[in-house]
Image (cartoon, rainbow over all chains, first blue to last red; front, side):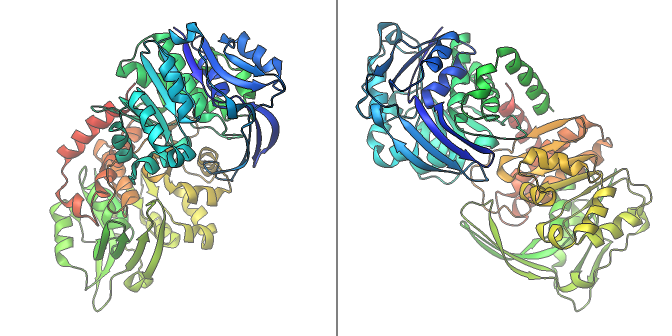
Length: 300
Length: 300
């Protein structure tokens, strides 16, 4: 089965302790697509300016990503994000944000997208997330992410999104901000009250936690020797997860657990280089090798 | 088999967001003993003043802790530590430190202690740790912990300790400080160079990482709804670990993995109340129940 994703497609300007990269292809939907395409066909819904390199879109297509719903705005400039990471890479400052063509973006889903079972809403304006949900005919499993600014500025609309989402994936600090809870476990459970059947709280290099009303699953992160650039880790975590779910075409708790582990493995590759550089050469065999190693690392 | 532990026995004055407790029985060796005694007999080596409550020592004895090597200094005052935790309980400030009877403490091991196979050196002055090691006849498995001040002020003696220790258990920040590495994985591996066969890097609520030259084991922490007081979590983690190892009387990698999981489970109870309050009523059946739940929580 396929998976639909909407979110940003961007140029990132990134600075970490290990170097910097300007005009790096990025954005939540781009990262998600590359990761998900390791497992299943992807339908990408987004917008770019005509400054966006055609070879990146061509690469996506070569990986089974349908880019027909990527609108190219003639004369427009692609969304741009700049970020600087501290030595503790769990912390970063946004140094630049230019919405550009994203400012007027209205997602319009092609028929093929609307009939898809699996859909993920990257961390964009919750109004856009709602518009995508409303166009879906009978989605089976809807995932979403968000970021701090929407929790603060668009709380009510975000809560509407949460009511319609099957699985929310959110950072630890954001989960605590949204719920007012001070521990990850209580924040995760409090988030279930907003509507989602599953909540995944992401803790970066410390892994994540999945809760439903009846179950809890702890997912450690695959230990990476050297994190070069954490950008896109969360998006590829979601991408690997939803790609796997779509491939298995199953949404039982066991499949979702496995999917999250696969997602985490894909994310562990993402951070080993800037932008999508490491992901470009990544194949499913490498993912499976690291998956076996991970299984060994957590067994007792 | 028995396990010998040396370290501090203390009065703690603790402030957390959930309240405060003065004159709380604490100290690395005390916490360790209570935890280890769930699994195996413990021989406790330490010092207190005659202000230390006899009923705490009596409780230890009731749990199978031999307190014959706990020196009671007549007219002396027990070691005292004061700590204040931030809302993020991974961070704390030491608000008070009175060595008192600990200032002149020279550990003298009874014959029974010297012939024991398993020994743990709590986070005391590495000179004292060395003195204990030197008195052991033929120890099979030596564990140790340390804290930041000894890494900074007693680096050379600490490195001597590390050469003689089988398993070092250390916080993430301390491991990075000692090795100059910026990631937990590289710091853990760098620490192996100092001599230990096993290095456990502790990440508090995020679990821990065990490395040897050939293997790696990721141990997530048992998710606790509400951390009341994190004091002693690391010490009871070590206590549960070494108690289990002593009970199984085995030091293969599989036993050590299991031991660390048990240690983590015991620590998850420790933080649910101030001081040793929760541990006082804890029995092995409760530990096993949480262990089964944990197994379910990490399986995929």
